[in-house]
Length: 84
Image (tube, rainbow, N blue to C red; front, side, top):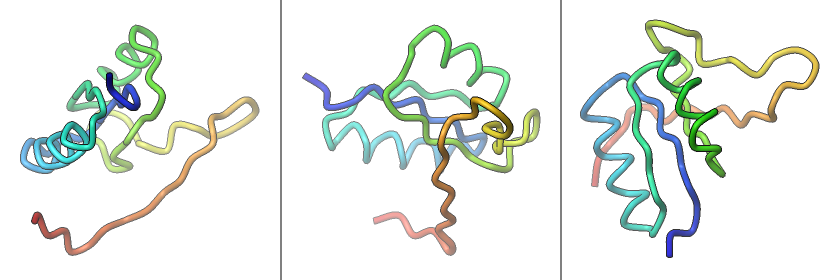
């Protein structure tokens, strides 16, 4: 049984694949989308436990949680990224 339902939002195909594979190996169920518009629909449909969100998406700014009632966010940047 998966530990968490994760929604992974990343427009870069290679980065998304590496992150999804790592989370799946850790036992999580991962739904992948490439953009912010897709992420909003997937969030409503799947109600994930965790959203891993790129903050520089081409269609929507990843900083969606602002204002009253916003979800808590943890922003971090890994650079340079090195795949194991």
